[in-house]
Length: 199
Image 1 (spheres, rainbow, N blue to C red):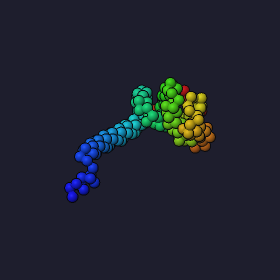
Image 2 (image 1 turned 120 degrees about the vertical axis):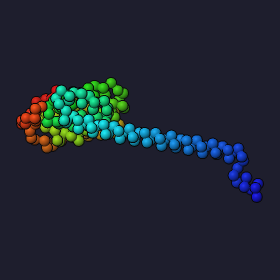
Image 3 (image 1 turned 135 degrees about the vertical axis):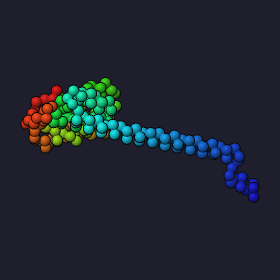
Image 4 (image 1 turned 90 degrees about the vertical axis):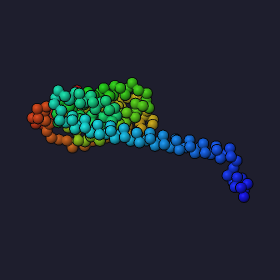
């Protein structure tokens, strides 16, 4: 009976080997789980920070706007959507600083290899496409200028991501104008929307 059981289970060395494999597998699963949990926690923390900075920006005094924009820039791709949204701010000081920050972002992307740059450009182009229809004339002009720069970039246009880039840029140029209205200056006074550039 014992001999038959040993034959079914294999030799002792094989049993020990299977035991080592099981322990290694468990260790790998634990390490992988811990890493995944850390990534999720980091993403959650970054999202919270981005929301707080976005809220702080809308309430910041004029002389604090530059620093708030820099803080959003420090988030990398996570801060791009907030910067694009800020282009359409009714406060011109916020809109101008956001445009400058995105110009600098484009410069940094231009220094990267094509594949990496394409990923960053996709984040920017999608954000522009999502907000373009709500922009007033000056913000729309800034968004279209950024889309032009994306089209002139060294993105990998033959990739699937490159195809999406083209579609998002097209959406920026073709978005219907839903943002006719008035603009508040840095002192809260309201004036008709201007088509003067934000640069």
